[in-house]
Image (cartoon, rainbow, N blue to C red; front, side, top):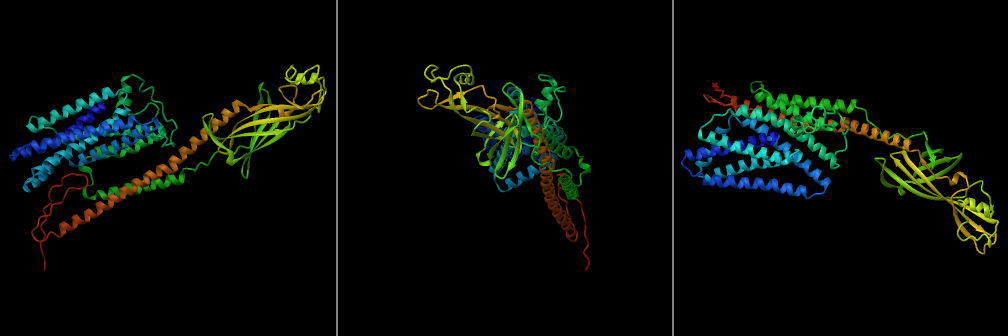
Length: 550
């Protein structure tokens, strides 16, 4: 509630101040306020409509798309509040004089409608910012109803303060007010950065930097006042991830320094030097990260085989994955007998196994078991069939013995993550083709026991080893993501920031040269006023008299 209250108060007061200044100017010059109020009401309606439409669109989307929409809204809100903080830091002190100068120009051209448009655009800008910022705050709040009440109270108080200022009832130090609220909103916006990064991950857009950092549950237990402040107001989760902490710091530190840096110590017309210096520092930091952070390769190819166990849990052999020109080869060794299964790359499908993205193969092969008799008696057939005479064999009419042709059908499933064997199973089915022994025609029966041929043993990779492999792969992926975050993505952000600052510095350098040219070229007896610097502080006019020499 506190966050939305301050948002509503600050944004509402900005709009109220602008409207109040325009209204006072119009009234002082004997003009009606009707056109201005039409513009104000239209802007309020449009702003509310923007918020409602965005919420309807967000609610109507599937879950992943909702998370993506929340990330977009949060990002737009952060950009808007940052621009607003910077703008007010520059113009709060001179807002009245600047607006009255523009208003005077409009009235000089005989255009009251221009002032109504000014009020409309001012309220629309603040209203649009408020709608997007509050919507992002609602989406990250624990109780949207309480958050909404805070916004309403803030807006109502802003209207009251604005009216009292208009009537001359109170005098407010706008510079200090916007500095204090600006500091608070910087922390709120930094929390929105964390929320936007989290919803972007949940939407599947950001996959790096998801390692845990610190556990803040001790600081802000669920349902406590601390949780309402830390999580509800400042937007800091109890389990911040690496990329969320990084985004929080990258936003909070520079913006907070900008807001709190004393005006008397700001560089003024030489701010381009600071901008070039920061750009150079950011570029150097990006280069250091790119060189110093080691590149993390993919999952290492394992050379050690995995243990395989039978249905009763006894280890019966090993499984080893070997690369081939067109995929892999699974070599399973059961009771000393090795079997190779070709895993063609084009035959794989995608599947999640043990929480890991893997490629899977389903392969069916037929083999002839070794060490089995070519002739079986009726009693042996009963043993092979689990103690029962197979269906279709009559003990009186088919006394045996029978000629037997053995065949084992192996249904194997193999899961590979990267180049690593994650899991594998083999389900065997043994069949006998019987002839003779009184049978009038060959008969095929499926047998379930009585043979210990290695080829007929069903097995699976030991579950504990598969889980260990999955955990190792997950750690390897996390390490690779962390390396990519600090080796590629963070340097990219720093490089972009350096480029933007360099562009602003170049613009400031050109402006400084023009200022110097304007002062030097003022001529005899002229007065050259140095304009506002890039920090927005009104410099006192510098009166310089230049004497001409022939």
